[in-house]
Image 1 (spheres, rainbow, N blue to C red):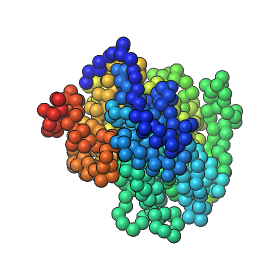
Image 2 (image 1 turned 90 degrees about the horizontal axis):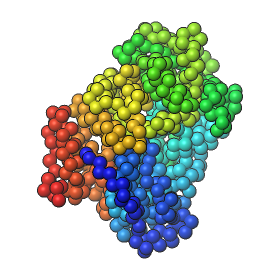
Image 3 (image 1 turned 60 degrees about the vertical axis):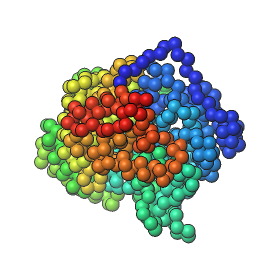
Image 4 (image 1 turned 90 degrees about the vertical axis):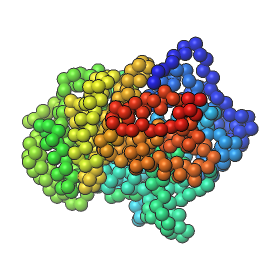
Length: 582
């Protein structure tokens, strides 16, 4: 695809018709709606969003919402969505979707952005049933703080900082690094209150049954949660959700580094970056000779029933553990961290003896597969550098460091532990064929891909490889896109993983152009969309195109995607080329 630069083109955002704007203003009040250029621009590009950057370079105004509206209650969301349907105005749901694909306008038509920053309350906690009900802008920090006061916690922490909104994660994968004990977020939702794309209300779980408490994820009728989990906000808006809580074996407050908290002048000082683990938790770091022994150990640890988190970090340590980008690059150049490694989070939930018992099991398995523990005797400087994970494993705060140099896209695989090797092979081929955009693109080539979000028995792991192109360089952005698309195509050709993102979520144009998903999941999703979104206004074309939308795809895009299929010995996807060309 060729990016045409129009340096002299004036960027003029779309505006909503005045009657539509006034109808929305009546719902939320004058102070909670805006089409001010400075405000709508802040909603026009997400962090992990190569298309958003490219549109900025192309001076393409379609990425800028026509206005932003801030509801304060479920009823206001319903009213906003009904206005959008009445006037056939597309809308996107900001916060109910984790990645750039789930935040920006999806068409060139004037688009309404609904943001939930006014809906940030913990609605209630039931200590007896161990559940918490929250609004969509509640973040993991709030969830953990409120639960831990009561000797509870939500059972996991994401690799998306503590400021991440838990409803946002629910709209996609809900991946946790502490998933080995209770599973990831998707396994810890008991109920959702959803505003459907036509404004109707849907409740799931036992909460939907009159007179029954909010304690169980099942209710009469089919389980509808999966229509929305992984939908990237295209099937409906999560207005409230209830999550499971679990016993918390530690103090109500998290430990602080001995030096205290840094200020702007001292953030780079390692003393502020070296906390101890929470009480009754331990982290174990092991180095392995190669990918094969690492995978064998991962599998055996998963089956052994020890630990609450089981992960392999690879290149990510150079970001998570460094306060500055210069330190990141220094460590990357030195290969400072072990190329093949595992860290296990052990928690003492049952008795004073649990931690000691688990340590014996962990050490025995490491020895079996030639693993060496990082310790005061072996690579103590590396172990010291890894100390940010001591707290990050429970309250994740270091992930934003990946964005210091344009962390702009990610590619997942999923499967049994062996998927780590398949992912390494595909990513190595991608880098060898296309080239890297930045030195840390090589994470997963010269070392293990990130492997995390294992299920409790290790039946499934996620792998991740990322790109870090210079966002100010359109050619590097396009190169990064090529790396992503190449890897997706290879994944489908080799029948690895359940979908585009590894956890079954799907985004266009990959949904349509890789019907190997399912197979033909695009046809199923299209039927769902017709039922849930009859007017086609909820993030149109985000997860699946309608037949009409397909006819408007640019011919160069169709040819490029079918070219990828041809490279992987797959038949082309036939689109009505006459209409497409028009």
